[in-house]
Amino acid sequence: MLADPAADHSLPAMAAAATVSTRHLTRLFRTELHTTPARRVERVRLDRAQQLLLDGHSVTSAAHHSGLGTDETLRRAFARHLGTTPTDYRRRFATTRPPHTPA
Image 1 (cartoon, rainbow, N blue to C red):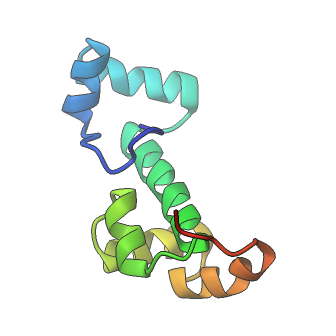
Image 2 (image 1 turned 135 degrees about the vertical axis):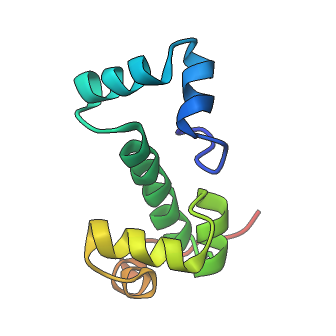
């Protein structure tokens, strides 16, 4: 999940990769991580989107490459978890990081 947040991290796909049932995987997430698989996936994707925004990606690019999909989904995740918009987040925190130089 961390290596490729934009990949298919649906409950059935993760359960198949872990060779457990979806029900058991949900139990494991609750027991070990104190969250649900969907919430964990969203948090990982949000963390990736934050990094992409600070690296200079557009909101659309950050949404796509993080796996959140659309600008609207990204905006909603930012509002729910961070209480701000992606644009305001970048404006506020991008100045504290060195500029990204593309390879």
